[in-house]
Length: 310
Image (tube, rainbow, N blue to C red; front, top):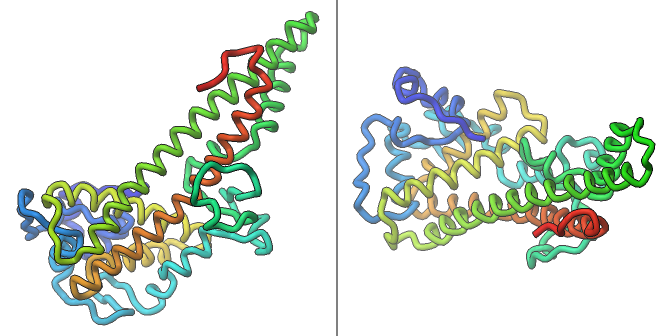
């Protein structure tokens, strides 16, 4: 996840680029000296981001592909383009990386309850974030078989075959129940994140309307921005970017979100990033939903040993 640095450390750091490296591109407004935001005033994301961008670096952005104040230059912007980063998030089955990429979850032709399924190729892999792979990965039948085997090994001296069989199946049911709970929690997290991004996207479509109190909008801004930078991090890791290139990708995203230019350009950038991030979360939800369905099907085989999971 995106990290936060201590306010005093922020003040002592000499370069804004160093600040952004330490926070993985995430802007903490409370750590920006000279920023004056009226929390009770109504605002929109373009106005709020533009105000933060001015304080973030007094020097204006040099151009579309250069921002010397944030130490982001042409090659950095090219490497951080959303289309480029997407190559690290989605990997088709025909791509050689499909079989060797870490944390790759494969979207296969399995039942899915989500209407967004048709937006993504069936035989495509989606690279997920740290901590998510262990929740989504491993098929339900394989997980149940592993749990049964471990239980049988633990009861190797138990000569009551019926008792061992019951213990093994009960253990498999418990394992599947736990996996299902974890999958449901992950799906809710992704759904909540999509809601935040969707709200920011709609706000960015109305450049001249001020619908939110600044204090509420700023909370939502930070949440959405953290989601975006977390996805940038996943993509950069998947593409094999080193530390320097990864940091530059985060700074490029920050420059686009805050120092793009006019209010209209900033709003357009926020629409692009929130839409990009939302689609990625939808792709992950598809696999989570498929995994839930598979887990429920497998769990039904053990109804006689434990009450059915909710």
